View 1 (cartoon, one colour):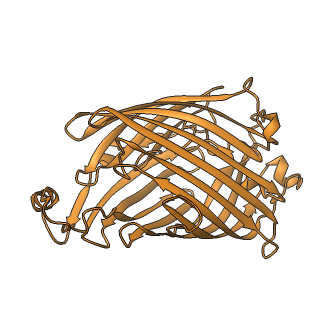
View 2 (view 1 turned 180 degrees about the vertical axis):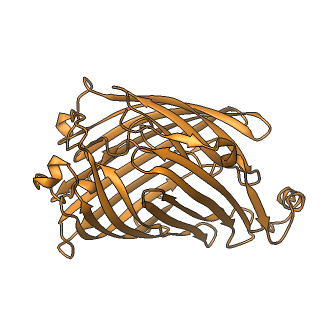
Length: 374
């Protein structure tokens, strides 16, 4: 099995803490139902949790995560801003720290996002294409620093909710190629790492009734980023992310997601569109298959069943290809699975999640995190 994770101390992952600085929970609910007032007083809240897990690559790892939720205005239609933070350290010296602020201003017309992460860890590379095989020599060690700044405002020429500018930075150092034949032989672009700078734009249409656990509405996202000669590689990326939500009764939700990504030019292998991971095609190691084009369609049913606990079931199919005309339905990569949810922020409907996913050819994985996969 290419990605096998054993969650240790599972009960610890359902511990949570809530810190509020203005009002208690009852006061928040009371203010929210005051329909005669055009503003509401929303408190700042923090939810945190510890976790531990084991993989063959990381060995035993311990981490903490959390989400800070706040509002930049008391207006009743204001969406919640958030800052998510996570970090882990493993017994074999690997670590990763990530911070992701997402802030709404001016009655949701202005949007700022600035994810940042750095780490030292073991990854895997199976080569490029949809028919790569296991050889046992996939691991390699890297150091990575990445940051992306996105600033969005209402568009002038398009009928979208917001459009923005994007700046993307990534510095990857391949510290140890180990026995990975593709990297040792320098067969692929980026086998020695490099630095890239990207500049782009995006469009977003967002009609979700809740950004953390939607019951209705949709989300459509379009992005283009160009990486010029300022960096070590010259290429561009294109991305479409379309989501739709409907509920049969409150919090019994059917969610669907279509995702397409493309990268053309002198693309380093670690920036190629990749299949797998926490959010798309759960059941495959992130990057198990990668190429210049990736397309997937996935579905998920979500429901709470007792107190703050819920469950999901999901399925999806997708594939990678070197060109758009070479996508084939004969070799689709299927995935399916189920997961548990714990509602650790009741007011904003933020879930702690644990998912177990399965793919073909013995692929599987366990995924742990905050918020839904899509």
